[in-house]
Image 1 (cartoon, rainbow, N blue to C red):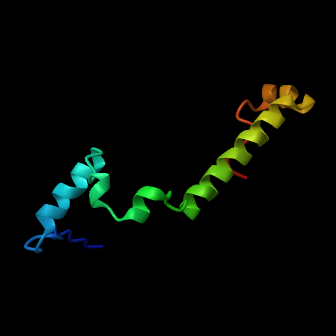
Image 2: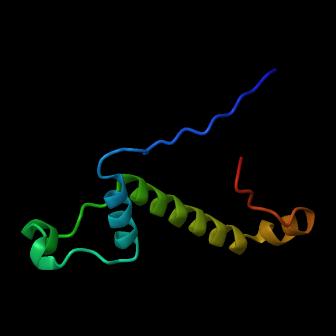
Length: 91
């Protein structure tokens, strides 16, 4: 098998790329626009929740509850001596 890797400058010579990078870095540092310069709907309502974020939160909650309930189980102490890694994160 022969493999060749090449670096490709993805944003080289793309108009506005440097400014976009600068703006993204400032936003990441929480240097966002003043509320007065934003559309009214962005400052008066909350943004909709991300479906993937809601799913992840639900999954985390179910996992945490299951682990708590497992620890309360009379079988948990016995099985812990055999396999302390229970409950397993994968099936």
